[in-house]
Amino acid sequence: MTIGRLASETGTTVETVRYYERAGLIPAPARTGGNYRSYRAQDLERLRFIRRTRDLGFTLDEVRALLEMAGDRDRDCGTVDALASRHLEEIDRKIADLTVLRRELAGVIASCAGGTVAECRILEAFAPSVGQVRS
Image (tube, rainbow, N blue to C red; front, side, top):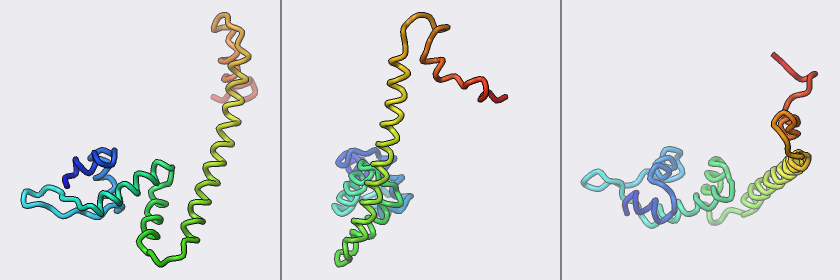
């Protein structure tokens, strides 16, 4: 299978496939007589795994660790569970942070009474207070 087809089948770009190769997530493929990359079904499945974990927000290092764990079929899955649980905790933390940011921004927007930019409560809220101005 060509790199273009591999990319197409997984919803990635050719450059993304090459990036994952350089990052060591996908093994270097065999080459044809014309020096084209030639991918196997296993490469397609591996790239689908990578895409799904990346879509779920796992870092490249976490994906690498998950791939390594997936390669050891007899391994206890507790390490996979622990890694996924840590990732879920990070997602929950980010959601909490975004919820606070959303509430603050919604409050600023709600304070807008219209008028001119000179009277804009939104811009006023974004401006540092006099004691915080630095040169």
